[in-house]
Image (tube, rainbow, N blue to C red; front, top):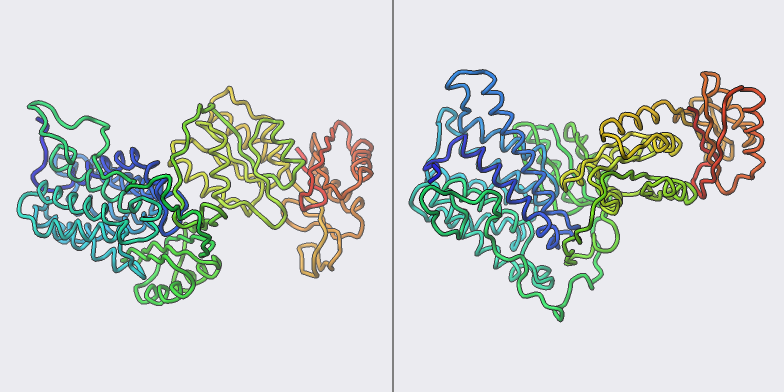
Length: 571
């Protein structure tokens, strides 16, 4: 029979993290589907998975560092080393409300496990203390704790463990059983869960993590009969956990029928700050929104809050210290804000090998990109897509590999957040930081799905990077620019994002911009016209290129209502 530890040491931490990641991988879609509180955005399972994935990476890095050092002792990190790495990895990689709380649970455990830095292991009593401190510290990290959530499940696990005598395996099993009972009781504590006929998604995830702890310390999945001699747990078998649904029937009321309102944005960032500044930050953010969770310590914090004014939440972080890794997600209309809406697991469909997903500013360009085989996400003027829209577009592509083209410098962080989320779903995503739709056109022109993914991404990135971009637009108000002061109604020519020309006529300004761009050379000019721009403008620009620049070709497209009057690309 496989050897299992009687105590909790560094290798056990490593094994636990790996098994927890596997368990969450099996349960991720189910947990996503029952995510109805505090926001029904269907990502709790994914967020928990990504949080633990970060913890696994940190623990593996500690073991790898000790192995590189060599020597019989140096190859074995202490329990304190492994526990601190687990907590730090979870902290910096925490995603969403439940992921942030899980990070604090792991941090609370680590504070107890690492209290004696030289201790190689802890026993059942030490594990009890760690679980108790984890539950208490997580509850303290939440501005307004709510029963019927992962906090209730964590507290019940700690309560059950505290009254247990025995080794670590016995304590872990008691904690798991207490968590299961608490999870089954969550619908009776939260009306939104009862209405939807589900248990709490975050609590469901914690039960999976505790099941992995039992497997680590006993060699058996909870509820599994004793293994015959010479055998161990079946690799890849998901842990036994309570069923997610609790008697939901076709006639049961669905909370998705209720119209609710709530903050529009989820804001998450890491923060370098002192304790006193964080105390003030909590008060400031609590007044701005809800679902406030601030976890961490020792100068590094993970901040999570739901607000209507995302900028104010970030500014509060700037006042407190140095925010970084800022992620802002807009809760879309419909299921994202319909508290209690249950999302069924996505239908399994046949995936293609590779796809391109691109953000485009007008209907005409959307049609152009679609004809070229890309999945287009329309960005209307003043209405940039949220990360959730990009995630859904990647899912619609049904591809194992995706190239993402944001086509706007201001969408870079939104696209990065979307890419990170779908990577957690097993999709390989490459983000090419295109700043204009004309750069996206250049990238799409060299795209070949038949070659290796890395080679395709390099070719597309090179084509986009070799394309200078410009636009001609109309100033909305008087302002200072890099080319001088412009007045409302002036025609502006922007080259690579900076105002280079201020004029009064669209054609003349566009000619000036073209001359500036082609002065550095070029072989192909791409013109994308807004529907308001007459064909005569394109005719004049094409004639200008033919007359003044030999061997330079021109291609013209209609972009639809794209915001700018004219987009120009020079390759």
